[in-house]
Amino acid sequence: MTLPEATPNANRVPRIVVVGAGAAGLAAAWALAVRGRDDNRIRVLEASDRIGGRMFCEETEGFHVYGGASVIHESFASTRELARGLDVELRPGPRKKGGQSYAGGRFWGAYVGGSLKQTLATLQTMLFSPRYTLAGNWELLRLFAMLRERSKDLDFEDHTRMLDLDTPESFAEFARANSFSRYLRQAGELDLNCFAAGSSDQVGAAYGMALLWLWTINPATRTCLPRQGIGALAKALGDACAGFVRTSMPVERIVLEDGAVRGVVTASGEEIEADAVICATTASTAARIVPELPAEIRAVLEGVRYSACCNVAFGLDSNILAEGSHAGLFPPGSPTFLTMVTNLGATTPDAAPPDKTLVHALVIGEQAKALFAVDDDEIARRVIEELRRFFPAMPERPLFARVYRWPEALCLAPGGMLRAVHDMRPRLSNCARGLFLAGHYTGLPSLNAAIKSGVEAARESLSHASGSEAQGRRVDSRRRAHAAARNHALEP
Ligand SMILES: Cc1cc2nc3c(=O)[nH]c(=O)nc-3n(C[C@H](O)[C@H](O)[C@H](O)COP(=O)(O)OP(=O)(O)OC[C@H]3O[C@@H](n4cnc5c(N)ncnc54)[C@H](O)[C@@H]3O)c2cc1C
Image 1 (spheres, rainbow, N blue to C red):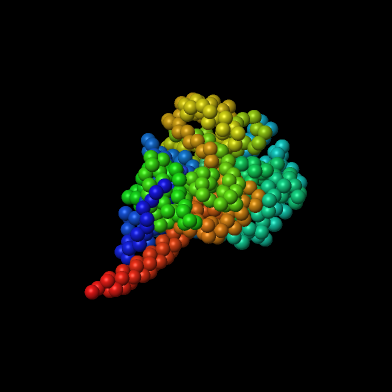
Image 2 (spheres, rainbow, N blue to C red):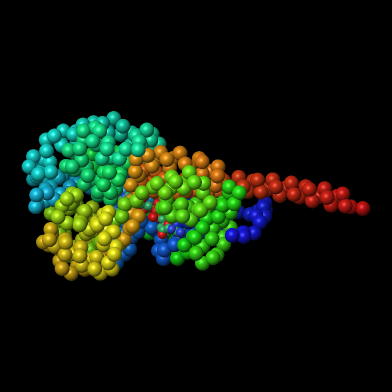
């Protein structure tokens, strides 16, 4: 790439390019805009024809349909702050939670804070479900005690205090070493399938502990959501950033020269100069589009692993799950390719029009990849057929079906990855000045990590760019002084 020589000018505003308009990229753009940058100097380049990435919601027939993220946890401080800044009100999720999991040819319920009937059903599950054993329940209590001791460190806002837990071990190895294998078979594996879209041997021990503590083992924690679900946040963020996002504009290369960022080249060959670039894509894309990165940094990015997930949403006239149940779960080994069926209508009532409901079916891993081989209509047909085997109320013809394919759905944070990414960042700033990485893999993978990383990258890029500006001004004034001296010397 032949970018023109940077010409420092006392009045120029730094140019900042953000690559990717997912949660991280949009949060970065929002933070740059809030800090009062000239909009003309911020460019967000998005490869696809829509913004939001994996935080994506589309409105159809009065429904707010989620393609990716659906829930925020109350501990997600950066997400809450962003919502406040965008005037999106968050409401605490229901105290009552519950789901049913499949075992031995039927569903078994487990409920927190439910009615007497649901509490009895939960006891029945713990005593009689073929998946539950007393030994497994005892292991769950031991794991609960262990995680409670570190609970302050298992923090999705700041994971740096738990990096000592991030050994090369997978969660499965951790469970074996600490005699939690029966708990893992009973509930842990299924929970990891649902929250990481991966298995215990793919998810690192540290991430597994944090995920299980956040979403299932600690019953005191809660979700929070805008009234119409996460789509309201996605929409407000998208609207706030619309002025500087260019969609259908994939970046082919982020250009580094002499250890500093110079700009980007788009797939259509357009060259855009920049003082700072925020790469807010997945790690694998970052490794691909910054070919000049040193080998040890590329190795870290290439070591980030993702699960695959196919998410199929159905608009329905009525709920198909059991009363009070938000989800139907299928543990590994169940006679189906489905992993989880959620009734978003129950957790987010305004996601669907009155008297209607929204159900999502999720398929993960190899089963999802197998579905990716066929077209959307065929995926919807297969999923409907499968749902009708387990949920007799599922109609043959839903009001609508939407298929979302995520070949890189959730970062699995394999053992040692969190620490490797954390340690990589200062090295990156030495060898690629002006390049900042954002995205959910840079923290404990979640929407919150994406948003936090975007806001941080905006702050760092501004401080870098103002440093370059100041340096530019110093160079400028030195040049002016030299020129004045030369002119003076040339005067007769
Ligand atoms: C089905 C599903 C359910 C989920 N549920 C939850 C949940 O309930 N709670 C939660 O906290 N998290 C959840 N997540 C995770 C959450 O969605 C992600 O953590 C978050 O949205 C990731 O944001 P990001 O900006 O890091 O990446 P992305 O959203 O992937 O954004 C990256 C963007 O970069 C663009 N891009 C890629 N390559 C290029 C290029 N070369 N040039 C320009 N642009 C490019 C992409 O098109 C994309 O828009 C879920 C994810 C999925 C898939």
